[in-house]
Length: 76
Ligand code: SF4
Image 1 (cartoon, protein in one colour):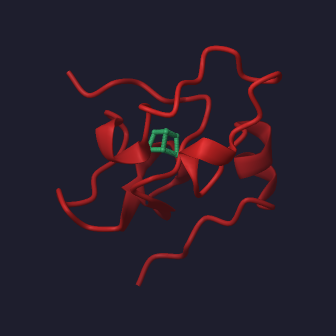
Image 2 (image 1 turned 30 degrees about the vertical axis):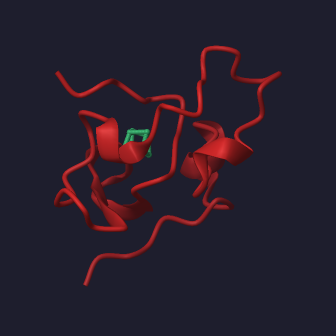
């Protein structure tokens, strides 16, 4: 199976990835809101309702549905 993205992964750190969108650093990422989650991101390819799924921004590593990073782009 695909590898889970950790918060300490260098690419994850570069994009400010957190497994919990409510834990995102507000001072570093003022554009973030807690309503923004991986499950609502265009780069997330997990199934609706699943707790995690692949993210194309991280070579399809597994991210949390409730996670977030600065590459967030709202699903159209
Ligand atoms: Fe989550 Fe989107 Fe960032 Fe991937 S690009 S980690 S789906 S917010």
